[in-house]
Amino acid sequence: MMRRSPVWIAVALLVGGSLSLPASSSANPRKTLREWARGPAHWLMLPEEKRALRAVRTDEEAAQFLIDFWQRRDPDPSDSINPAQEQFWERLEAADRLYGQGRKRGSMTPRGGALILFGAASVLRLSQHTAPSWSPRSPARSPTFDVTQVTVEEWEYPADELHPRLATLIRHEGYERAVLKFLIEADRTTFMEGERLLELAAQAAVER
Image (cartoon, rainbow, N blue to C red):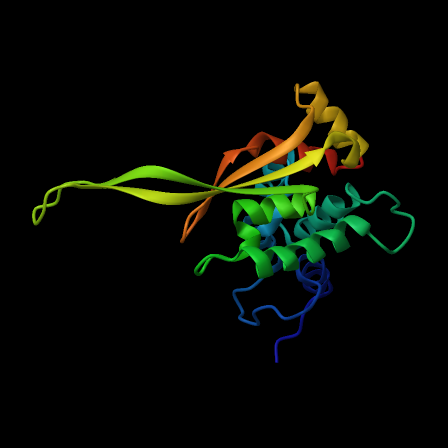
């Protein structure tokens, strides 16, 4: 059985909360860190953190990156509890349960990212719309035209219900409230409105 180094164990606990990670000889903290950063955690990462991640060269730097990442989001680093980290895992689990589509896990979809960053919406609206669709000409047939039903889902968060830092950021950019709109199709979900708000929410989550 392969022995885990202290650095590996630290990274395993920070990225997954357990040691249920691959035991292959090729697995290492730097690889685990990069896989983690490509997953649901990418919703939280700021541009400067993505640049810092690319500069990680050693296992020790990988562990320190994760320690620093979560400490920046911890309102009280003096204790052993990090509410931001616990909230992330809770919301990630909820997103995976609610918003999976096909083989894509829910926490990697637009609605999953919104749930991770904003939590449950105060107001949820669903509406049905008709939209034209067409299939281009192929060697075997002429192009076809049709009308299809699409679902639009709208999430609304009044500014006074948001974290004060986030409320300040969205007001600074001219928003009175946070509104996210998604186009829901059978096999995928896409943003219609609100991607910039997710960037602001990730920024507001950083304590220092």
